[in-house]
Amino acid sequence: MTENKPENKPKRKVGGAREGAGRPKREVSEEDMIKVEQYALENCQNATIEGLMGWPNDFINKRPDISKRVKEKRQEHKRLIRESQFHQRKNPVMAIFLGKNVLGQTDKQELTGKDGQPLAPLHITVLPPSDSAPNTTNVLNTGDKQ
Image 1 (cartoon, rainbow, N blue to C red):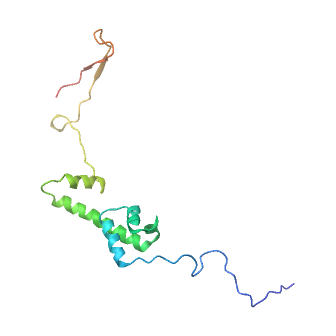
Image 2 (image 1 turned 90 degrees about the vertical axis):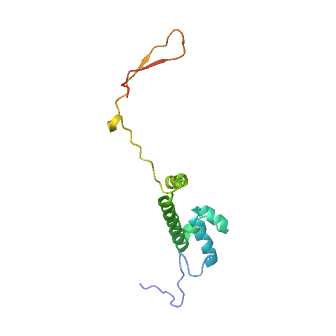
């Protein structure tokens, strides 16, 4: 059994993206990219940048060329914060704030007792309420004083 197939019939594409199909890709000028880079250097979030530029949501994430430049400028922003922390002399409060909130830096707190010894355990005894104050609890601290 042989099948009769017409040989002149063009193949029809099924599914997938076809060349020239869909909306044309939005062009982003170099002037716009300078603005976007400045916003990223100021640590604006993608949604904020997209709103300021009049772009649709998730536009930056869908464009690898723009996303890469935004990430590079955000890295530069972090580098500038570290540099300002290093050079801060008069008032380091803002550098500390930015370090904690943007760079994820934390204060390391070590609690020690007298002369760097470990803290002594604190023993607390809870006494029953006295007749003079029926709604309060008396607490007696029996820990060592330092």
